[in-house]
Amino acid sequence: MNILLTNDDGIFAEGINVLYKALKRIASVDVVAPDTERSAVGHAITLSDPLRVRKVTRNGSFFGYATTGTPADCVKLAISAILKKKPDIVVSGINLGPNVGYSVLYSGTVSGASEGAIIGIPSFAISLATFEKPDYRFAAGFARRLVKQIMDNNTMPAGTLLNVNIPAIDSKRIKGVKIVKQTKTAIKERFDKREDPRKRTYYWLTGEVVESDGDNDADIEAIRKRYISITPIKCDMTDYGFMEELKKWSFE
Amino acid sequence: MNILLTNDDGIFAEGINVLYKALKRIASVDVVAPDTERSAVGHAITLSDPLRVRKVTRNGSFFGYATTGTPADCVKLAISAILKKKPDIVVSGINLGPNVGYSVLYSGTVSGASEGAIIGIPSFAISLATFEKPDYRFAAGFARRLVKQIMDNNTMPAGTLLNVNIPAIDSKRIKGVKIVKQTKTAIKERFDKREDPRKRTYYWLTGEVVESDGDNDADIEAIRKRYISITPIKCDMTDYGFMEELKKWSFE
Image 1 (cartoon, each protein chain N blue to C red):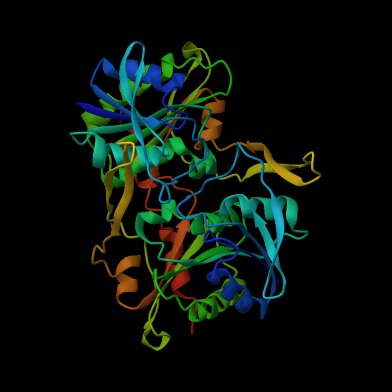
Image 2 (image 1 turned 90 degrees about the vertical axis):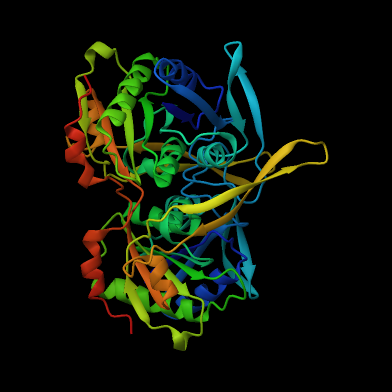
């Protein structure tokens, strides 16, 4: 089995290192990841700049390919130009910080997996729901179990990926897995307005909070209640439910 | 009525100028757009850099606010920090080039509108399906009619935006409007591998083609058959159809 591994925290992040070691035990793993952090790049691709690729050593041996692109670029490049064989699975992570609710749309980690899903390769994104003192070991072990489930069940639809979030608590306290939807509460955020030394105004995006809507069937509440959340994410974003209503509108 | 107008081709693009003039006839229009082209930034947001805003003059008078951010940043900034009143509608465009199929996930133009939809404001993205000699006038007139339809019907669900593509042909030859889904064919692309003067390899993404799947109910085929395509796009990307199957998997 061949696994393509990417992330958006960059090839030198700890999350991808722990995940690499865990997956190496069951498969041949190719790493193609951004050379530095690319958080919140969303599903960006690089059109106006050339992409460069270099080999990276970690743990004293060849680890993978670092690129100057985004996670989506990495998956494209890996499959079109770097790897000799198409991977059986694309895995993106382990991200430092949760990817839940509408922030899925901004997530570089998720975009690495959706690039795989669009090409028709079973893919998942995995994130650890904390920003401090991360311990990636349990998440990496779970990723390995998920790879086996994906291969054994063999029912992942093309164009759909799995978005996995692991609660950042002692693994004994984790209650299990919940299959849940994206939380629909809007992200609460504000901008800090500041003045630079030349008296020019600038803004920092800050205070981003995605609040739980209290829905047990949604990702944020599931994690809060100590479950691993798995959300199947569709790259076909058509709102089929609204199409009939829209057909009644008059455009003459 | 207050309209917030953004785009991803930048505030000095012709598409946003023609659209501004058309919408001014029916509403108060605020422009907050990137200071330069931000194509294929997807739903990126700027976390690691401060954002700057400056006033821009076009056609001899105040036109709007240029920011150093992405289209999604522009909409966030406009609503949180620049505008005095929350807009009634967010419009993103007119983009030079189609936004169809899975490329919707990479589209800065669409991300401007989805930012509005997430906040709960009726929003649409509008694109002209050509890359050369664009004539935006018909598209701008259509955008004005669509604004009226959105306000009159008042049925747009929160979290859903409209993605509109206008065929780049003489308006008399346009057959009408089709409400269609996203085309599901993967984007065909390849990388040009080159060597720089110092003999280092680099790659250019090239040859991107989203081919029609021949489906009359999908965006690409509708445009090819000379219809205006309107696709309702849901920011809740949950694949509800796959959830039941996923619940059968074993994660122990």
